[in-house]
Length: 74
Image 1 (cartoon, rainbow, N blue to C red):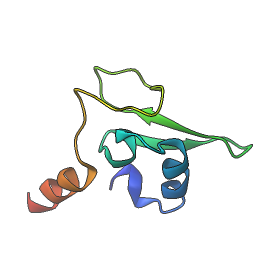
Image 2: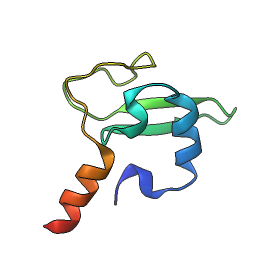
Image 3: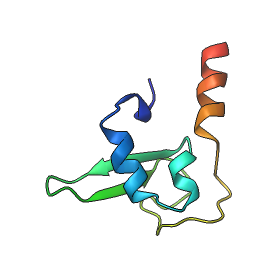
């Protein structure tokens, strides 16, 4: 299971990452507040938890689909 298996989180992620790499990154997780604000949390251990978006370059970027595909092969 990945953070993106929850379909309710996908629109929040799209709003939070508009125009940046985080929307397609395997390390990004959408956090929604009770007031409807959306934030991105980065789960990469070497990067800030809450990056300023849009992120246009990142050493820890990993395609979300590529990681999911690799997990399903093993």
